[in-house]
Structures are given as C-alpha cells and as structure tokens.
Image (cartoon, rainbow, N blue to C red; front, side, top):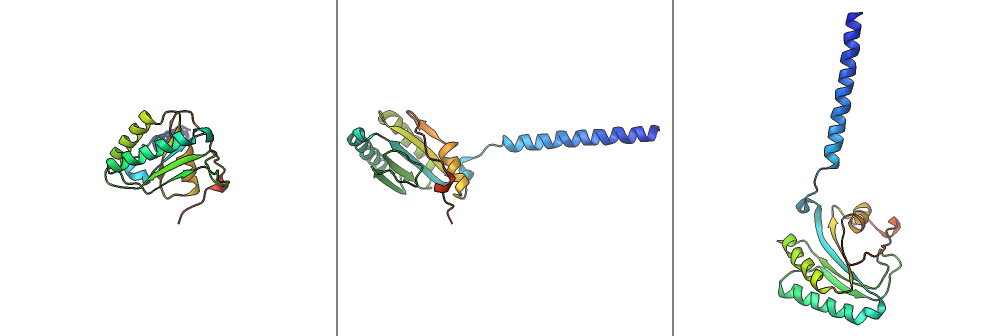
Length: 168
C-alpha cells in the first residue's frame, strides 16, 4: 500500500509540475515583447481624416507635412489626398495618407514626423499604424485596430476581414 501511495503522490506532483510549467510557458509567450525592428517590416502609414467642409484646411496640413518630410529628408513610399470614400477600404471618411517605407533610422524619423503632426494637425483626426509581419489579412487588421496611435478623436474604421487581402 505504501508503494502505491508514493506512486500516486509522485504522479500528482508530476501532474502539478506540468500544469505549472505550461502556465509559465503560456504566460511568458503572451507577455513577450514585440520589437519594432523585428515586427515593423513594412514601414508606417499615416492617415489624416477630415470632413468635407475642412477640405482646404486638410490639404494645407497635407502640403505642409510633405514639405516638412522633404526638408528633414524623411523618405516616403507614397502619398495621396482622397475625397472619394472607397467601398472596399477600412477608411470611412475623406482623408490624406502618407506611407513611410522601411529605411535607415525609421523609428527616429517617425518620432519627428509624429511630433510635427501633434503640433500641426489642429482639428484633423490622425491614425498612425505600423505595417507588420508578412502583410496577411490578420496582420493588416491588427495594424489598423490594435497597433494604432490616434491623435484627436478616433474614427470607426471598417475592419470587415473581406476588405483586407493577403499580399504575396
């Protein structure tokens, strides 16, 4: 009987150890830090939203922002000023957009760009988000919902998975 009790006790201790070990592993994987260098692989996007009556003001801020980026030699991948709301887009209002490509000292340069926007956006709502991972549908949704920085009131984005597509 003594041997059987010891085996039962050892089994329960082993089972207890395994459950604690799995909790520690699970907990550490949840709270592992994501590093910008490893996870921001496609640069950043800036979206500035406005109402149609603020179109001229929004365009002036857009032009001034592009001039600032040029002066500071901060490279962009693309930019655009959009009055039309596209049906298959997460962006539900008129906006302008500036996309920052991966480049040397990107994180420092984004600090300058974001600070300029903080000081000069006035009444525009601005969304800044990274482009992470492999640009899958799931990562694009996370980029637009979880990994966001809002200046001013946030805008309800359309995050229907059907509008996001995996990139090859």
